Length: 261
Ligand code: NAP
Image (cartoon, rainbow, N blue to C red; front, side):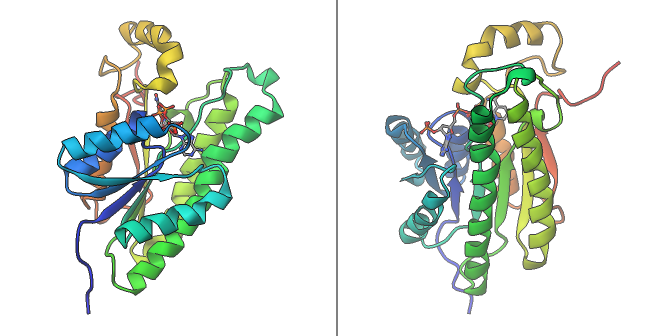
């Protein structure tokens, strides 16, 4: 018997601020129950949940450090206890290097911190979430689950002043391909979204630089990206708009990736 009922559930990591908050809101506006994960900033996460409620959406907060593998099981247990199912995992949580250092001087500490959160943490959370999804599929509590990872144009664009970030995002691009290949037989689709230059806290320190570059013609669509631009893309994928696709890369970058002459 098919026991699927109630609103589908999406876990969005790093959803208190920035892009993750935009994703959580976009999903909540479309009827998803959103688990808003945050690491330290409870006030921001509460404000994100307030936004969800203001949009007549449903959600709840779950604290966990994605870079700490010990937090993963309690995170997923909390989602299941609260919502009873997990239909979509959105791997959004990520960090930039504390200092944009020339790769000739990148420290092992910065390398480990960035790779540890962005790549190692996301890989093992995905592994654990995939196992949960497989069990839920078996129990017929979900249908057509999806895993969506927010990488970056840095997955394919070399910035020698943040090599560890680029490496982490390139690794996540391959992780998406790997999970897509491994999970397709079970009906779990896996996608990558590559945002470009998005206006958030992460880019606040380089705002003027990017203002100048955008004004100088860097992007075919000559404006900053917004968290809701990424949110709309996630919502379309989560809604099942691409049933015969997996492992795909969706750019949300104002056309940055288009080679021009
Ligand atoms: P942001 O403004 O710095 O916000 C990051 C969010 O992630 C915060 O809510 C933070 O939680 C959370 N977070 C960070 N580390 C975490 C961890 N270990 N565990 C759980 N949550 C964690 O960043 P953003 O610009 O929105 O970026 C979001 C994602 O998009 C990142 O993966 C980033 O690499 C990617 N991206 C960003 C851009 C851009 O231009 N902004 C472009 C391409 C890709 P707290 O609030 O609790 O600290």
